[in-house]
Image (cartoon, rainbow, N blue to C red; front, side, top):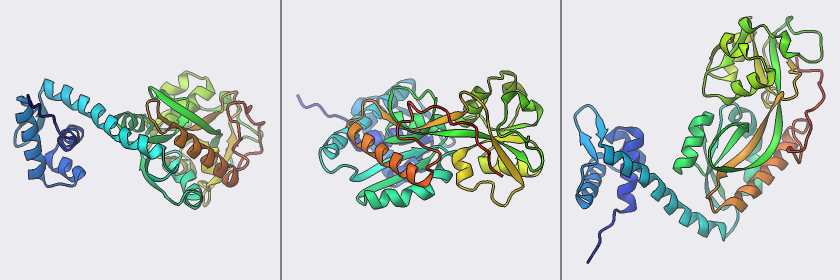
Length: 323
């Protein structure tokens, strides 16, 4: 008896439609025409003898069984990709494509200095970058859309392995003239009514609030910034104070502003930057090598920020701050 199985292409069409909810956008993502994608899905439905998608002029609605099959297809496609990963891992290290997710509070400050050095050391590595918030990056990692993620810990990202890179200290940014004369800022000195925070979805907000250990800040702080650059501009206009990581200061985020920054005096006044990947990935050795390279490069571009062994490194003593 001949058993006809779904093809990888058909499963890719199904997953793309599930993720985008629109035939046109799903077809674009798969680099095919809309009619080709639609025909492929009808062939899949005919093969399975099931209706997976209800088609109307306005919406695409998956049937309950269609949702289950689409979720299973994500896992099948991930396993298929890992077949290639196994072969690649046995060949040249850091050779070929690697899809790296980076969160917005790291990407603009670390990558411009890091990427040219990474290309020099591993010229055969084709690095495709995707900037996502922490939640979105973790979801993309487990869907197989990303191979690894540059993330700030602590953050719950599911069943992953990690390689710690360095600690990134937290600072408090003040409008010029409002920074305390102290070398560092005690959490108790912060006025909750003037505290500007990133929107939900950015883990930097949680890291900063955890470091302060003041539960009332979460309820009273004004959470309205979409990016660190936006928050700095708001501080520059005297609207309040905010938290800024050291790597952003190193990258010059305060240049051209009337903003001063002082280190946050807290036992946990830092976030820990790490490279993470799915625990099931066969490319662990490759990711460890990438992490070693990123750690070495970080020591070159931000030497006062990093340590070779961040897991054992104590929190740095308060400094003089920036500004």
